[in-house]
Image (cartoon, rainbow, N blue to C red; front, side, top):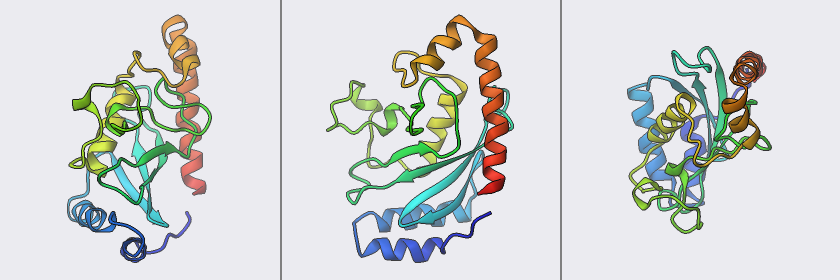
Length: 180
């Protein structure tokens, strides 16, 4: 597995670039003091967080170790981070090209995406609340807002093929994680 610079060192570097360092340092301290269930911090590179999301129990994604990256804008926490999976994942709410996650909690009120205002990004959201939302999405896809139409259609028209694709992704995710 690759070695990453110290999280604190990376966040101190980020502090010189943006307002996002202080809230991220608080969140990092909280994660280190109380490790969350279902994901772990893999590293911080240039102020962007790499997390490993463990497939939720009793879902098709169970047993997977999916690497994702949160890219924080300079204006965080006023604006949401972007989240994308680095390991391949087949899911109706994850874009096939690039792995970007389509979930309302990451919708910026200023980006024009249609979602209810109370579901959109709020500065009180944390890395943990984002990952919990994504884990919920893995367990229960949002078919009203598909990002991967092929996955969405397959889920409805050929559930067996969908399950096979997800199982392959789970195996791939573990190989990807081991190579990281």
